[in-house]
Figure (tube, rainbow, N blue to C red):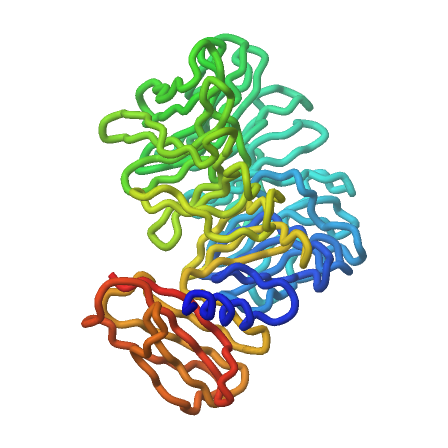
Length: 501
């Protein structure tokens, strides 16, 4: 009976329209049912920069801090047309406190712009000097210089560099003339700038540019000769360069390169030339508790959570989130001392998961209940917030979301406040931070699962702004507890569960 009563109370503290799972926030850049389609999430100085549409403007640059309302930096291309295409790899970066990004003002094509945080963004350089786009992409910063790829009619797509003051300089023209040379990702590693280059002699392989000697050279030729290995997902982890590449004998596998010795193949999960990995746009690998996690494909072509242990060289299956099919875990990022990623368990579609390195991965929240997928993408951890783009299905469409492990509980939508309950699990003191839009009288209560009061503040005044309550729990027995925040009339504003260790 007590369980039924608790269930009833939890269900009825949620009012009217569908609620987000505990800890989630929808920024709803395009208000209502429209989709804002956020892309190119990037972090600088504790803030998130991204592109989105508000339903009136096209895809434009935005900035958001914490859980505040996102702010439009500028409507770069007035009207409904997007200022940036949606097929770039990495069209933004930060150098010396400035935000560099690719955009279109409606006259010069898609070119590089700079935003200093105060003045309106300004164009950096237009190598074509026409409305044709040079389409800058693959931004990476090394030694106070911005390296990127850009296209001109005369030389094709090549590697460029910008020092923040003088005009950008083209560094390569490996394939003479208008043929493209640089066809993939750019990354700084071991004193050089690495990039994917496609030539008639070597195919698509890993090359480098040495700033000290101003020279380019072939670094790794996985599939020797004119065949292409198409390196992808270049990621620097613990002083080594990890990437996936394809060969005729092994298919696409995981490799590591130390900058000196030949690259080493680390996987062959699917033997006989079948690929063990698939290229993705972002967050293909993540280092967590000494292991490198990735989406590995078995002989059936099904993707599951795998890990490589650099200390011993072992490659092992971690968990089959979908025991009967393809889970395709991806978008790996470390947040709250856990490994977060997107996966499909075969029942709930693609949703947000977390793994603590010991217990089996668990779903964090189902934004699209049932078999529909919310497809969280571009996971970006900044402070206490884990930002991502996802589909809320029946509510706000594809929008910018954030998960905060301290922003938990089932909330009454009349409660206009930000609430953070931490740590959870708790060992000594529980902290409840309430940031009120308008001050009012509140009561905070802690109870065990049988409903017995453990701690009760009584009704107290809470003021506009930040309020903090500390609840001592050191001497309480381990187990589950419930917290409640109510107003002076007893209306439940917020309730949630926490674990005492």
